[in-house]
Image (cartoon, rainbow, N blue to C red; front, top):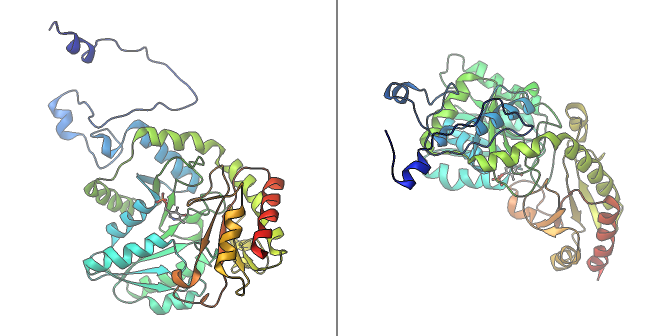
Length: 399
Ligand SMILES: *Cc1c(COP(=O)(O)O)cnc(C)c1O
């Protein structure tokens, strides 16, 4: 068939580039529509596994490649992507919870995950309870007949307590064993954003599902939003996959490419930021007006011994708790006086960040009497420059 119209000829162009091109970076394949050679292929290509391509939402060579590399990073076997870290968390909730079920969430979990339970899951008749992640017996007490999903997070958000993951998982396994024959055993899901696949191997510690905000370390650029959910269990993977397809969650290949570019340097960045963070956290602990620095690698920080036992590195976060006698306005003035540390959410990018938090409003237990807290995320700047910045801004704290 001969095409006369220029537009038609430009779209249905016969040229095919030669085979055999190989480069360091994987190709970026972008698609909503995926083309089939014939009706038979269109009808029979399976969209529920990675044996072929059906529609851009369900995967491209670029997103499948990223999924495989992320499964390797975390020591899992199956990975799925979603458009943000929060999106993979809510995807896991939707995959495993039904009306009448209950989900248990650590009191120190990532805030928006708790809000999803309070605002959305509750509206669908799914209840939630917050448990003390530092007390496995508290988790055991809270598990009830309706419990179907237990969230874990190591270290906890903002206060950075490092929980005993094997002990928490053991409590869930004991509950499952006591309900032998139950068609829907309790699933454990870890928010592994902090560990990032570098600090510890989540599946070695016994969790069923690991989610990560790729927005943080895997990207490393503070310029992309994405999340991953990884398992070693094909049945759990397929359950999450079907829910993901029904919800219409997928990621674009340009964003996947950004994460593929960040991955080769993730271990180097993680360890470099870890070293700077430990140095600054230890220094901050010596400063007048700072009553406590929270960082799992600091002796005296909650869960330090467990972190030493189960992890080999720590993320780029620490939180400073100020003397309760220092007014919030002075702590805000300290944050405003910082020049290299910028104000903003997220972490694990090139730039150092800080943000004040009010513990009394984000925790249901403990911390009610604590002074103001500032969380620091250490970037890739020189540690001497960052220390000098903290030192000059502490002048504003004391007025
Ligand atoms: C940032 C973050 C998330 C959410 O990631 P987004 O991509 O910002 O939605 C989830 N958990 C933890 C621990 C995080 O730090």
